[in-house]
Amino acid sequence: MNELAAKKCEPCDSGKALPEAKVKELHKKLGQGWQIADGHHLEKTFKFKDFREALDFTNKIGEVAEEIGHHPDIYLTWGKVRVSIFTHSANALTENDFILAAKMEEAT
Image 1 (cartoon, one colour):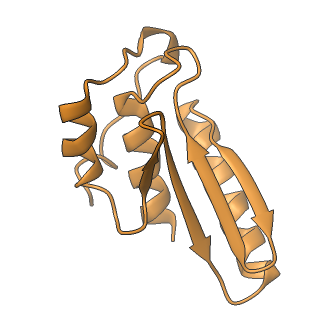
Image 2 (image 1 turned 90 degrees about the vertical axis):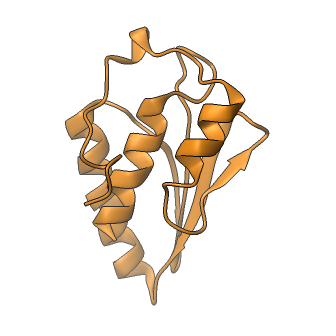
């Protein structure tokens, strides 16, 4: 299990924006394909063979997000799921965002 995926999220209202060096460090711990967009949020597009697989994955990561109380933006289309993650209360990336991304990787 990825060390990030093993962690628990802190309440979002206590999340502090991470410094750039920490963002880069945590980014290296994620699976391939994760991008840091505008230094502000994490994004990844997951690809699947059809709509059903993409929908099943969407439901899986939705359950993960609900369990930990940290919710991404999710875009579902035929054969693809794009996620965007950042902490709204901090208006930046926090450790919670990287934890959620790692848990999503494990859901694939």
